[in-house]
Each structure stands twice: as structure tokens, then as C-alpha cells.
Image (cartoon, rainbow, N blue to C red):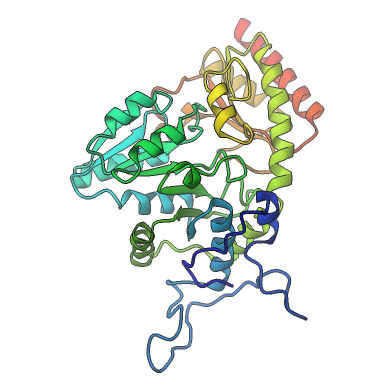
Length: 387
């Protein structure tokens, strides 16, 4: 097993689906466990002379974290570091922006990140430029003099697609770029290979896949950037739980199968929803009519299993959600179960997100059951609106 923070063994000839299954396992020796064991430890035995041990203290590393970090690093092509949650990872990344520094942020980004950035602006005088990530010229113009360009690909919840290769290559070496690739997963895009400096994942979502663990990850291939985020994790104590790391690694093993099944469902549902009279718009890059389709097709290995629909207003969206039986009303995504929510129900959601927008995380249930539930709920919502 690689020590914490070590660069993963790169095996470029292996498919990502194979890496997801095999990376981060113990050495294959007789009677050795096939899976890395869960190590519950807050304290490690020291060494004389000092410094010979690789961990030192429970806040600095754990063999179970290391197994997950090795696997995710292998998938992304960098060195991974696990955190207590996606937001813990996001806060650590925001620490890369100095006091009074300049941050470029998507105008439609995860509301938790927008709130964290606003907090840093109030506390440390950060200057924030909000951009349309689908407008490459706008992003590059705003990046002039910036300390960090933060991208989501695709964005949450508007499903916009950024031209990552163009943006990241243009900024390489002069502005640090971070890509939140939670929606895509490393099976659909690898931002470090496209020129990004840092990749962020909410491991709570697709990596876990079973809605039972909170965890976040940052991945970098620059030693200095990695040193900074690792120091932040140590000092802030934003370390993952050992059991959570184990659960996320176990979930990672089936990610290729889960994502393929959910993505296939999402593509069909997006097509059908686009033709439904109650649905005003479907946001999904797999649709040929979507503004991000050509770009996503060129950059990504698939279109993912997240989509958003726009209904007439909040009342229609709420009536639609209330009428569902199979789909789960929940504020998460990436699980085996299909989930959805009206994002503007949250007071902190960005005001540019339409009131009637419903973000949908398509799961692995049978397509016919998912569609039947959606159609009956849309019909009920239509009846409520017309009444």
C-alpha cells in the first residue's frame, strides 16, 4: 500500500473500469486480505530515531484513507487526499486563495461553494468574479490576475459544459485551475489530463453510490499544491472517518457498472421528458439540442446521469415532486436510487436558478418504472396547475 500522499502507480494500459476495481488493494500474497482492512486508529507507535514512521498521528494519515486515495489518484492521474466531506475539501481548496486575492467562480455553481466563497470574501477580502463557464472568452478574461479559477463540469444544477481543454491549457502555469468533476466522475473525464491543476470530488455522491457516507477528495499532480492542501487538512482537522473511507472505496469498485446503467436510463428519460408537454426545458448534454452537447461529446466519455428539467413555476414543480412514488425527494445525487429536488427550495440557492428547476439524479432502477412514475406525477402536476 502506498503511504499517504504518495503518487499512485500509473498503469496507463489499463482501462479506468479496471483501475476502479483493482487500485488501492493490498499486495496479492498468500492469506492476505483481498480488500484493505478497516484500521481504527487515532494513535500510532512512534519510532527511535524520530521520523522513521510514515504517519505519526491519526490526524496525519490512516491506511484505510491511503487505500482510497491510491485508488482515486490512479483514476484521476494524480495524487489524492481525502477529507471529511466535499465541503471540507472545497474549504481546503479555497485556502489556496490568499487574503485579498481574486477568485473566479461559476455564476451557477454548487450553492455551498458559493456560500463558502462569500464567507471568505467577507472575512478576507477576496474579490470574486462570477462567470458563465460555457463562455470560454469570458472565463479567460476574468482569469487575468486571478489566483484561482474554479470550474464545475458540468455545473450544478444548470448542467452547463465548460471547454476544459481550452481554458486549462490557456491558464496553465500562470493561474491555478480547479475542476469540480463530481458530476462526470473520472470515468467520464479526467481534468488533470486536460490541463487542470486540481480536481475536486464529493465522494459522498458517485464514488460511494449508496447514500451512506460523507467524504470529499482533492487530487493534484503538482507537489507544491499537494503540500499546501495537505497542510490545510492537518491544521484544520478535516480528516475523513475511517469507516466512511472504507465505504467509499467499496462503492468505487462498482462505479463503472452503476454509472453505465444510470447513464443509459438518463439518456432515454431526457429524450422522453423533452417531448412532454408539461416540461418547458430539459438540461442534459446528451441531447443533441442541448447547448453543451457538441462540447461534451468532444471532451467527455459519456454524458452522465444528472439532468435538470424546468417546469412552469415553483408550485408546479412542488406538485410534481409530491406526486412521485418511486423517485426519492432528497438533496443528494449519485446513488443507486433515483433522487430529485427543486433546488430553489433552499434559501441559499443562487437566484439565477429558475424557481421551477428540478435537478434529477437518475439511478439504476428499471427504466419503465422510472418513466411511469414521472409521467403520472407530471400529469398530476398539470392538473393542479390548470385547476
